[in-house]
Image (tube, rainbow over all chains, first blue to last red; front, side, top):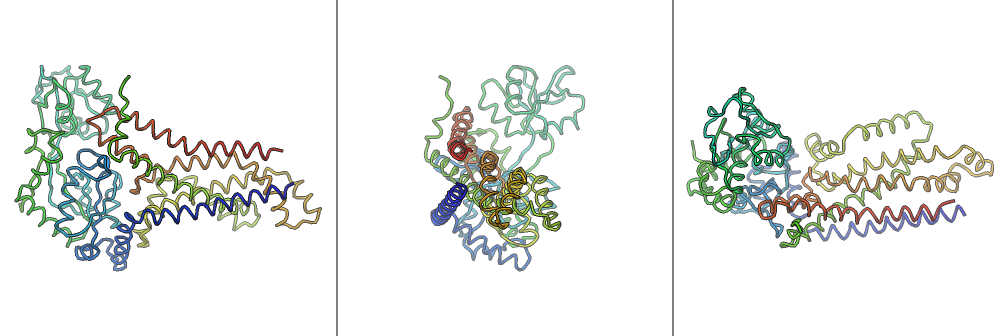
Length: 302
Length: 225
């Protein structure tokens, strides 16, 4: 009896093991298309790592014929994947052009906000183009190229009672913010007298604002601009508040050849107004024409 | 009827991409599950041995797996090995390694528990019948252990399948990531898409886990004493 049972179990295990080997074999040939790009790239990273750099120089990238660019795959309209499975968005618009001018194929790597620095530091991507805000802390970890977009805070309010200056907010009025955002930090620090109404999620803050729980809503300016365009009856009274931050491409710390090429390329693109064209192709639909000059930077030498 | 946004799945190749994402999840988890079960049986048996060095090593191994979140393990294996040793493991290899590392430890502990739960009389009777240690395990202990293991390991297997959603953190585009991409790409056109798309993802996970669950019920009945 027991022997019988054991045989069955071994049989089952063997069959499943065989099936799995079959499956893995199939899939590794099946996915050859995207994997080859990955493999060539990785073997080259290996080469550069043996010389203990942790990144690929401009020449190594050109030689391999593939550049690895880290982008968001779910942050419309900056970096996302369209219904045909192709990467698209403002960051990708730039990435496509970089690949074209460098004469190499692009291997897009889907990144998250939390792992962008890791990807650069390990040389697993060559450039990050993922709505990457330049900050001092980050600049110690990676090298930023010239910026191509502005970000700041913005304040949206109802059409009937537009707030166009934070000083016009009364003592009893409340401003809606989302907990943990730069808007909350900035207002708490610089305007301690303004009463804040804090919500954990975007959807809650939106509902509260629409119900008139606060006189205004402070958030990233791209967010409030998109909100005012999508919802009738709201105006962005303060489109740009607080510290003006910028978005820039980033490369691994110390990758001078790639950084130098990237900066020259960005200046050249800036002189042909490439980023305005990029805005019109990707962001116009979400943010409208009014904010084009507020948001876009054409990189220049100074 | 309120628009649930399921229609976004039929735009372009969206649904196909979702299925491809599901396949990525299933592939990583099934390879890991098979390896974990086989290694887990071995590690579980080793865990019952009295050798103090072996015990200490396995104890440390199990504790590491218990304490470390899988996300941290993924980061250590994918980014850490590149930083420290200069190895360039692919994301898939790293993911399978981490899932096997985790699965083997947990499976091993389940096997250890199941073996321990078999009464000493079974061992003594087999020895009395003249069987040696290997024969005892093969014909008496393991068959009983495996029967006790079924419900426990099914829990582990389904948990491993669901945890594959973490691999998006090392750049693997699996089913949940594809779902987020589809929802985000249609944020303006169909703001409610999140509900419909996640409902479909739920259904897909269910379709993968349910047969495993049924298999467990079948085996339990089949092998019941």
